Image 1: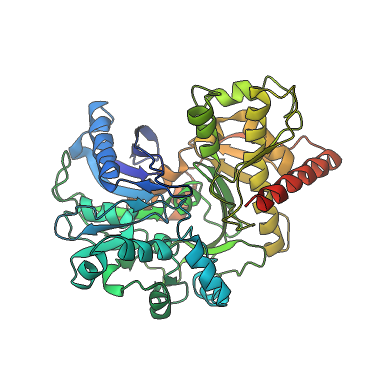
Image 2: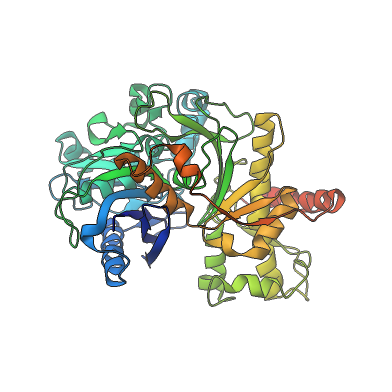
Length: 497
């Protein structure tokens, strides 16, 4: 038996999965790791905890009998994207903690660049807005904020990168310092036209070129395992993509106009724009979806993301104690017919697309004496869906036409109530695939292409299968009224910042 091993390194945990050469997911395991909040608005990870979660996952798939080490034909990696970190080139040992994509500590620096009128230049070259979400200002903070880091970087002792680059370095025993083009496009340092680090942007963010990884395609010969506990040396690593791009690939979103929404820690909508890079006038991002072997021009995408989605459910579970397990929210929310006038804007780390307000704050409004935990649970699910409506409507304005169906994936895509709310508020059918772990599937597909398990994307399109479609059941008038109430709540959350 030959299988593909996928490492899905996410924000709250790492999933290691196994897929066979027919595209069937044989199983997966997940290990969470601590989230660190040293100050309000700051979010950090211990890189060593991330690496240990990867190793635990690898051991677990063998222990569960999903495959044997000798069965692995190749490895695919997908990862939380904008999270930035430093490590020692010689040892792989982390230098300080990683700054997570949710972290807002560099908001004032980004605002200072905006006030200097630099955002149009940054957007033109990178497709991204000036926001602490992206990696460039995080790299600057790490090099300035960790004692001795900038000097060590000048001496070539330290490497910088996003999580994919860190995992490639650890998996190859330090032989590879590379990032794929989809992850590089999320740093605010790569030029979307040249597909290389932009000298002017490097100077703007004070990040030396020598500390950054090489930029490579998303599929192909990316390195081989060396010295990884539990894995044989020499296993080819042949697929890497940021988690949201990987999910679009795993949803077989190969055609121009195909769109997907991933419900994870945040929620992210990507739409394939083919080999054409579209400029957004509605607050969306232009990004690279992937680059396959032999492609001179990558596939581009439009993207909009809400920072807090599944993390809002975790907040109800961990901080408020309203539910014991994340899946419990569907049952609790279903005990009431609506949210009873309660609005929850989960701007716990600011607002993402299309608002881009890092100072907005989470807000619960419309409380009455009759408001209950069930109403708050329902309002949370509604907020998850309504944030996506804002993004999809902005996407439609950029496209100049209505979107068709929307494919969904991620852990919360198992929540039928959430998907029906999404269909109702969006006014479009929602399609859930049989394999909702499409981020994992994308990593496997890219890796399989890289070693010739699948010939091309046409062969992969035959692997994808739909599970259930949720048609919209809400009328135009009640939908318009509901969206107006949501907009009022958004405005209040912005004013609270």
